[in-house]
Image 1 (cartoon, rainbow, N blue to C red):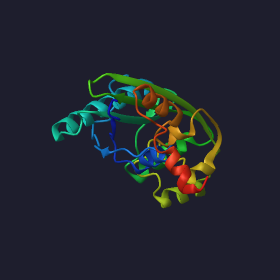
Image 2 (cartoon, helix red, strand yellow; image 1 turned 180 degrees about the horizontal axis):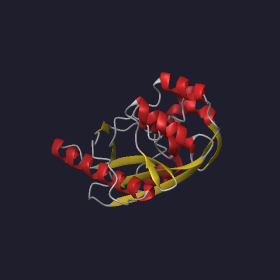
Image 3 (tube, rainbow, N blue to C red; image 1 turned 90 degrees about the vertical axis):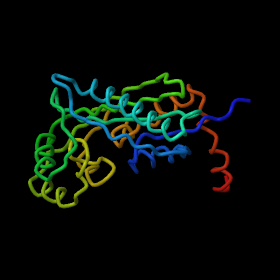
Length: 212
């Protein structure tokens, strides 16, 4: 019987880890991949999300190999990009950047692209790209100021976190809510299953613990 592959998450994001945990998956290793996320000249959001997910997976796999933990492991990486038309909104690092993004998104629809890449030990890749359309309500100056004071925007693509206070800004969402948070669960589970990872491995144990 083949040995169950281990899973390496190429991220230290508590959001992505929590999303995996939601579907009963606990990665054996966290190997963050810190890469340059600057878009290439003329690069569109969907291509950027795919490219960065690929680079993150490859970088994490190389680090894992150097640490001797990649012999029988799958590497999972994801990247989320927010775009208004052709304009890519970067991760907000300052309050001014977050304020600018929120003013742009106010009362308008934008798209969120989440690229997912899964590498097996042989370096073969499986990929998905998930597109979600979101419409924000028109934000008042007070709402923007109050949200900025919450600091939820820090290091978030587009200057907001949909799983937090900014959920109150969303008038309509078409696509995957989990992808906007950071990891599309349906697509991720399908990639893992297709690569031989037993997604349901812990489900029965969890059911037993809950008394079902």
